[in-house]
Image 1 (cartoon, each protein chain N blue to C red):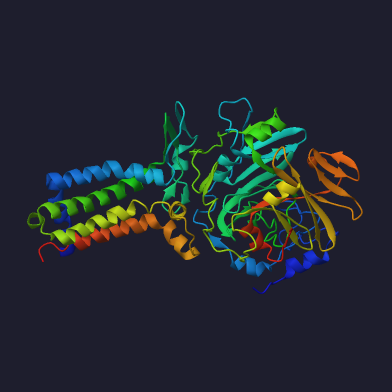
Image 2 (image 1 turned 90 degrees about the horizontal axis):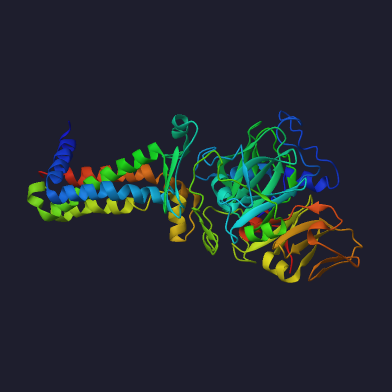
Amino acid sequence: MPDRTRRTVAGVTTALRQPGGRAAFLLALVGYPPLYLASVGHLAVGARGYSIRVVADPVTRAMRSTRPFSFEPVARVAVDPLAVLISPLDIGVALTLAALVGCNLALAVAAWRSPATCGVEGSVGSLAGLPALLTGATCCGPAVLVALGAGAAGSLTAVLWYATPLAGALLVASLVFVAGRGGH
Amino acid sequence: MALAVGTTGALAGCLDGVANTAGGASDGGPDRGPPAADRPRHVAYDPDHLHGAVVSGGPDKDGIPAVDDPSFVDASAASVPGDDDVVVGVVRGGTATAYPRSILVHHEIVNDRLDGVPVSVTYCPLTGTVMGFERRDTTFGVSGNLINNNLVMYDRATDSRWPQMLATAISGPLVGRTLREFDLVWTTWGRWRRRHPETRVLSTDTGYLRNYGVDPYGSYTPKRGYYAQEYTIFSSLADDDRLGAKDIVVGVRTTRGAAAVEHSRLRRRGLADLSIGGRRIAIVHDPGLDAAYGYALPATTTVTAASTGVVVDGVRRPPAALPFDRVPAIEAMWFAWAGFYPDTDLHA
């Protein structure tokens, strides 16, 4: 395993062993997926009553792509007033991003509270929190444009449609950049 | 902007009043794909220019899934829209049908049958346009591409590409063919139900699962988000500041050109008497539905708007039933209309 990768894993592991880092990780793991699902329209308020609906062929449907890194829902669960669309692969994407966000936050918290233990400077460690915050708003291209109330050139819009993998790459890069510096 | 009138536009200019033969494209064949209109529609750009202006909208082909097996409920069902919610209405064969915009925004195309005729009811959220097309034995799907922010459909028989507002194929085996259109009415559920108490309404049981109360672009009740603001998500084919980008116009096009009137102006005046290439077209307002219809008028006919209808040569008639040939009247956001038809007249 290359040194940088080993240092990254070690830094994250150390951060997760600390109570503060672990709490930040769990907070992201629980809090991020609902934000992500709401941003892609899979979690909404306004449902009436209680119901569960499942499509006829859920396995095939689950694999059907709707846009880059997003897939068809196979079930809808309504619990007044919440309605959740269950798309297994989208939930997997949300959990993956949540874990990466959690690792970044854990690293930032651990570095802030005890930089010496973590091997990361406090000021550098706080950088890990930035992509975690940014990715919260990059899940759905048009939704971002609508929220900003601004138009965009086609190229920028295309980039926004690929915001999910970009967010993942940014989060991994941030981990490697921050945690991988440990020991220098 | 240099206006290019290429093969399709030039053909359109030559064929006024003549059956459309452009639909029999070489390998498409007249019997393949959706049926051709009797006459082509005016297209202001050549197909190559239009094809080059197509952009990816983000979703994959069929990533926005058309409803291919629609089901309906009656007006008394619990899941019908609210009175102020927008619906798209049509009456064919004595049956009134409403398609809630809240469903259409998630599917954009409903492949349906009306009075036994296979049709597609289509909606583009980014241009605010609803249009109905005959489809014969094929179906339309959402290509995932846009032009001038407008939905580009494809037919599943030939994979030709059809910008919704142009109703004309810009690429594929059927390039140049113009679709047969029929009028759809953009109104509210309350207005539609008062006019047609026995109406049926498209069910949320579409075969797909969506949160139909969620509109990714904004809201019409009240109007906000993308629908209310000046920006567009993608670039337009042309810019025209005679009106605000999202102002709603009612437009008509013939083989020879296009003309439009601002919807709020039409609402105030009740009638717009237009001329396109010497052909007289009237757009009349239906106050009960707050909708508009287009008619081809004889040159000598006298038409005036009255509080309870339209007076044609001294006889009062309901706006939806004037004794003239209908011309599809399209409600659209101004930027979209002006982008596709930069040579459009704007009724003033």
